[in-house]
Image (tube, rainbow, N blue to C red; front, top):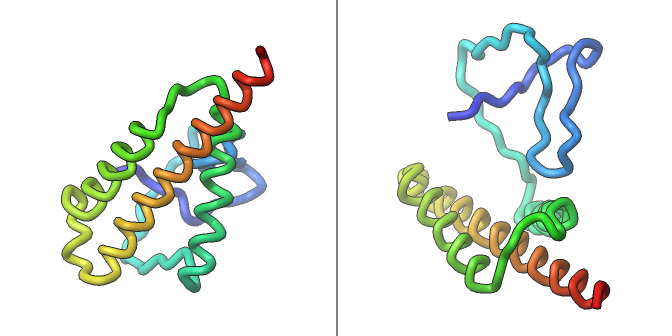
Length: 129
């Protein structure tokens, strides 16, 4: 599992240049694990999630125009796999209703990001003709 840097000194670290999946660059600094676990709830409501998913999927598509091939079929298959990975492989079903909501939200976000990229790639192709 990837480590996520949660606590850091802003004076000696920085974010990478990615619009999507940005992370803290520690440049050789020691990264330690927290001793205790904690609960992380990134959204206050479903509405907040929908807004963030829309923004995230648009940023992904803009960052990948002309760089990645996609299609409606890929958008559907990738989103279904995302649900399967989150709900089954990562055992989201153990979290009950919340796990189902998280898996479904991953599926929807993946669909939007690839279908938006498909749409933007097609628009770019039309402009070059």
